[in-house]
Length: 95
Image (cartoon, rainbow, N blue to C red; front, side, top):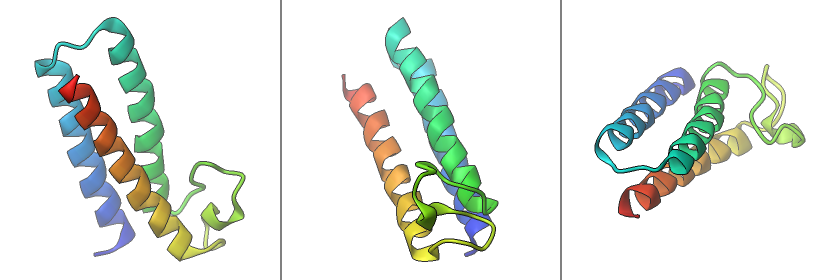
């Protein structure tokens, strides 16, 4: 599976889970706004990984896209951000 497919599936599944959380969970205005900002940040990292662009945090040269940087570090940050976002969604759903 190439990086675009991984980014597509992780991005779509996390977006659907976020949408389900907005629809079915009783989120307050603060939680909803924070979730939206978090979704934008994480969705950008998924797209940046899939289309070989700079990932956040951009100060690390290992996360540079366009054929530069360390592909192992980019892969690790991609999966770490996916896990962190799922943990955030589960914490909001649990609360």
